Image 1: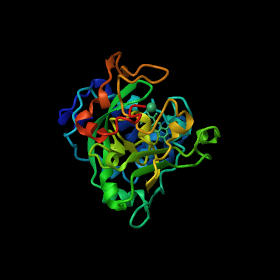
Image 2: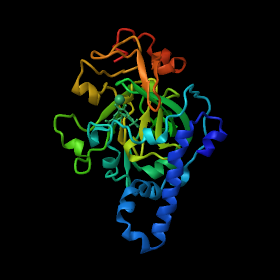
Image 3: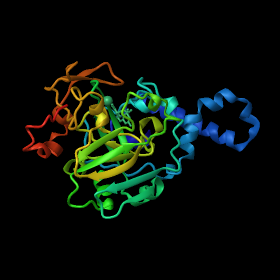
Image 4: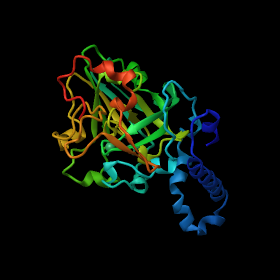
Length: 324
Ligand SMILES: Nc1nc2c(c(=O)[nH]1)N[C@H]1C(S)=C(S)[C@@H](COP(=O)(O)O)O[C@H]1N2
Ligand SMILES: [Mo]
């Protein structure tokens, strides 16, 4: 992606290739739209239906957005092809290759409800919300609890901007977030042993920390469905499962929520889930991580390398299970 190179970000040649393919497909889609003559090529058409969705996204013209260089990474960007084809999104199944299935998710209209301990609850359409929020691009690392990691350019807005917009009451202690519930299109949600819908939460101090980000774009385009369209959380100092996808509700609460993975296995997953190489998962070490797109295993860092921004959030909380 030329624009990334211009900004001086490290981008391996392999990452540029999918973008070229994407552009070629866009050209093809335009050709398809121009006349019915290509419609006989049914196989080609369905093969690029994902790109067609991206084309139709009404927020497409918002991107790319201005980069924020405050948040530095010391690793090359993960190839887009990998980031969009190796996913955790249990609503569409427990394997990593849910990208095609996720295209079933309708993302317009998409309403976001803000309620609980706020001045006035509101339900707002995603495009109206996007128009009110200060969009920027940030390169963040993401460390999954399964010990793999990626480095990606999100577009979106600071979660604090949404909190300010919501005007929470002084009694709010937590921000609880909820994913859509639609078992008709999300086959994973027909598995009744999971506590759907997916829920996550942050303390107010975490939610208003400058790193907490709502991602609405990825690689300078609207965020793909498999990555949590049309809006998902990005909290890079916590294990990936905290970064909840496809959010429909933000509820301010005075009660700590039980998040999805904690409800499933409280002995393995908790509320805080801050990255710490020295605290193993009960079934595996967290000391190192596999860097997707490379053959490397590198040491994992405390708070995933973001300690300068977030370590002070946890002062006085040493009695809590901060790292699971
Ligand atoms: N709603 C929802 N959000 C979710 C998940 C999920 O299964 N459902 N998986 C989480 C996990 S475990 C990870 S590692 C990240 C993966 O994000 P990515 O697929 O965009 O890399 O999403 C998180 N958000
Ligand atoms: Mo994860």
